[in-house]
Image (tube, rainbow, N blue to C red; front, side, top):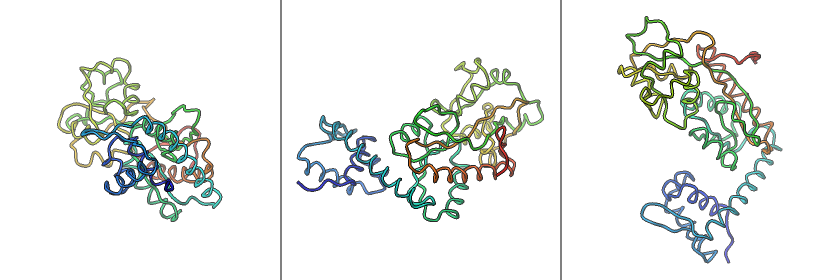
Length: 312
């Protein structure tokens, strides 16, 4: 029997997770023929089929399900060994698989990457943008090293580090610029545009508006903040967005921005990672970079400190 390889296990795990060869190849940053060849060699080495290929999707065979559990254990163990080696080396280096939620990634991620490249040139960030539930799943499974998202996440297996607090602002059509800012209760009487189900920012906005905002007839969903702001500019309704999104999302839309009266709606942004990760020291260094990038946005007119924080 030929030797099994970690590459085969990684490719197999990606196909099993995504149930699609094309998406798995993209996830692994290889061509689809190269990935398919490795899967085929793995099946030939083991002498048993692992995948059932259909026209629409990929299914695991019975033995494929068994192998998947063992392959994930092997890959997690290898990742832990690599993490311990990097931790022993000192400053952050090597691959950093970091997840970011969509309401943060487009606005904060460029500044974070730029700072990391200057401070830690041997570090190779691999960003992953998706919603909070998927980030937490991938983090706990070992597919991510850390994630930047809204706190709290309340996962006992994860370390949470608060970084900064960010307020929400109201986006209205430009014609409403001179009008008083509505109260949370009055928002429920307006056509409210929110992100679709699954985004934590949607839940935070609904929480601010109160229980009456849950009436479906008054809410229109969008997939991105950009879509919501453009819909407001077209006169369809109003929306809430985080402060860090204002410079990017409002520059090409005829909208007005206004703040709410105190207590203003806000969210705590933080970084999380597995408590078992041996790179605790390095991850805290990276968290400091994320905090500095966030505070730089704040000083430029975007963000505010959480209670008790001082300028570093």
